[in-house]
Length: 497
Image (tube, rainbow, N blue to C red):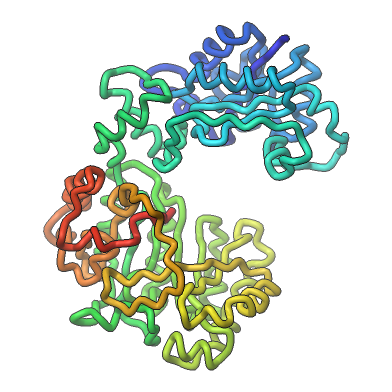
């Protein structure tokens, strides 16, 4: 049975992205595929690709996605019964995993096979000719074939490949075009200067967890400690004193420090205060969005000051990286006042709808606004009605877990969803929390800075990040500090961008 291979290059990828420690990844993948199947190798290239693969006889330029039309054209060139699809930047691809998946596909005459648990950089997808021949021909654009199959799995003959150990909890894609994953992959490679087999990766990480500690991926910036509300779940009132507005020089120091890591990262404007209370909030957002490394800007707001000026700002920026999360824990004036300590429901509702409408005609801002409601005793009685009320507006809803900040706040949860088995803390591995005065907290639970890593006034951002390395390593080894009391924390499994 003839099996060919498709090596797919993502849009925006360059040959630099496809090179790992001096080796051109597609060449390794083609070699592995040829050894396993003996079939032809094709390359799916985006229109903007200008690298060395463009001259290959097997190069195919796709319009924008690998939809049914693309796969029909590919099988028109190939005489294979099945085609393996690989990511062109899969530097750690495991040949044994590919052999196992081919065995599944061919033994069970499957139309489509994919991995249930292997990261994308270790596995593949296998498409049969029989599947493609059943697809209706249409001139309209459709979703990529793999997405169609996964979304309608019961309508196709699909095989799921599963292999131990399961390393999905590491959240590493093992794809070299992602700078953060590449840095981790390089660290894992350099342990003994070879690409590990899939079965070895878990052991390498457990013995060398420092390989994961490459730089912040999520920076929470507290623009101000001021807020007009008195929310029952906010820690602001527990602090010794209200923190001041952040100086723009402090913000610039953070952004300059992040450039040194040369890794993509998300910024969240949050903390103890309402970011839009800052007189220079728009300027702060401009500074953040001017950074090429910033992959997302999340603005957590109570919505009170998210007025027409804010909506106009968002529409004018038209930056797809921006997401606005409006914390609204009321269904009407009465329930809102009980949760937020002020009668601002009508204003917040009006502002949210205005934001939605202001960006409705800007394609880049689709899904810009989200509503966030906390899953606590006070909201439980009306959660169903809350969903019904807001879903009619077309605005997505985020259901938030309450954080008691190590017991600083009353526990209002009516359900505890904490996993039974503890895994290493995501926040110590990836987060950096910067207070308005330039203090860098131990983590987001260190709300008063009692265990702070230090201050930007005295140390560089790189030094402050490095100050958290040992805490991360201790956490990985299940050696939990008492200050702050990590053993009492239930935020270790929550995950930011």
